[in-house]
Image 1 (cartoon, one colour):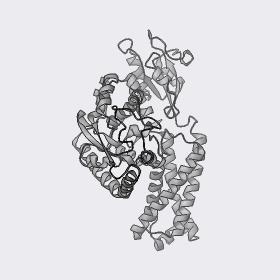
Image 2: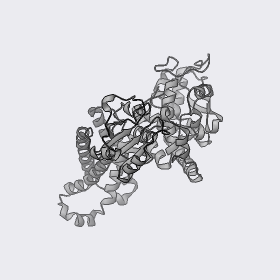
Image 3: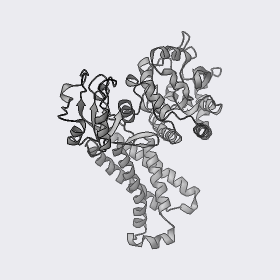
Image 4: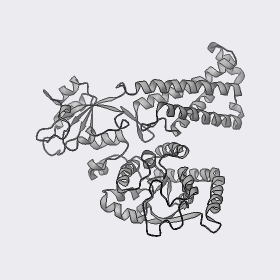
Length: 468
């Protein structure tokens, strides 16, 4: 089962985990105060009369802890780290949250708490969250939070559900089986077929089905509108295949996409309020990142000069395709040799021999992307959006991949949903996979979704995910 939060469809299990860990951090602050001042819980009211109200401080601490856990990818359904890796991320998140709350207490003296209280709260929160993660790892594979799903269809379209292999894509539901419509060829494993033994509603009630996914190859023949209506009125969700796949996988599946779904479906907001909020986020984030990263940018310039000589260029300007298919010059720190493309445009490869020693470091840390902030300030790009591609590649990919030009209906971005969910792309197949995530972002874009992506980008920068 999934719920919609910040423009994303979050598995119910992860939402419950986030709420539980927020509660742990919140209560850790109260427990720390009781331990530090040796006061029983029943005397908290008298104690707060002396040290001030606790709930705003505890709430701020809980929010900061959850944001740090989110930034390290610990609420991502695609998190594949082993338990040891998860615990390291939890430890790092708690340390950063501790530094953040110390800064807040310093800037806002009215919310100040003693260092001993803060240290105890951080320790208690860390131990509680580690325990919650261990419990979560043991419980998440159970079916407690999963929606029981029946697929009406057994042809080529239904295989899109049958072929979901990644655990992240199957975390929100349990596939009970398929019902084969009359005159539809069977393309799913025969052992997964269910015999209706009566009407569809009766089968769903016997199997305790929560959701029916309609995945017929041809709806013009034998569409069971009366049976599906009975299921809907009986309290079961009836969902179209593409909507189901979008919700469960966080992408728009091109193999089952049709224009009518995009035309009549929800999303694809481009109203003035949305455009204004996007531009305000671009300006605020760009100025903030530019201020913080200016020393790093200056060190990068020095490093490039030391490696390649004083006359070597530090910035690299390259034509890219932006909003509405218009071209612009994107700016990056030069990470390759000056003759890297003497023979024309080439996809970047893993361990690319054209990358310099300094270039390998700044690519790993995504420092080479920082000059794009100037593109954002000039309005050529947004902070969040699809990755801008080169005109040569766009022309080639648009001929081979359906709906590829639709990614240019929003401004390209420095970071984005596809960059979070899929590694660096360097082939036509990678472009196709990333397009599915780009279309999901274009359909569901909102200010809160942008903020969520911005926070999660910290994992990419801090842990070097997807860099080449």
